[in-house]
Image (cartoon, rainbow, N blue to C red; front, side, top):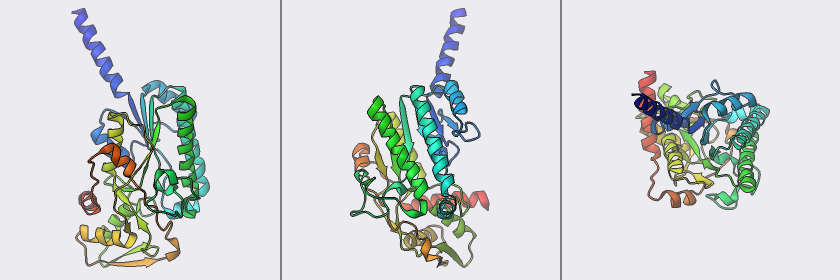
Length: 317
């Protein structure tokens, strides 16, 4: 009887420990919630659970969960106006968050770190599009989110430095713009497609968009990124790669696809403040990623927007 109790205790202990193998920072955000559907046993942390600006809290988190893998999603993010108005906040907070976490991952011998960057870190202007991973440092990022972009570039260098000096099995992914059911839908904090969906939902006759509608963008359904992260974990991939579908649309084309996908084709689009276009284009080449994934197919923009709009409508109707 005693041996049976010990057996089940050990079995339970192993099971509990397996849940602690993976820690996800920014776990309450857009990608974290999509990831939770396919990695339900990971530990998902928000800023309320662990303030990554505070080394002592990271220490406590590491001692508590003893992670083998850390998926780093946490960051201070926001729209163009927020980035323009508060550049100090964006560079300081992100540098501190990323630096603190990577240092503690090293101190606590975390085997694998998968950090999420953004294609906004690429040069504002490039000689050739789409841009490959080799083009990352070929020029300064766009002025509109310069501070945020540099903080993310710094994390790429930081990770590569740990790999070079300590032979870490760490890597980063560089996804294009994201959207999904779990995004923030407020106009000044959300990604463009999510804000667009909110505007379409609320509109009767027309929607207003910043800029001219001419800049080109890649947008990816967050579920796709979550599945790619899981693939990297399951297959022990440690490559630094772009993550983006092979289609690129103008802002105007995205808006019209959104209006059609949401069943509101009567809406007119009004553009204002054309100087707030942001970076004209930043599309990236995902050939390196697709060579790793094989036959992976990204969700089309039409299908993804319809999924998010239907979900949004049910929640806010």
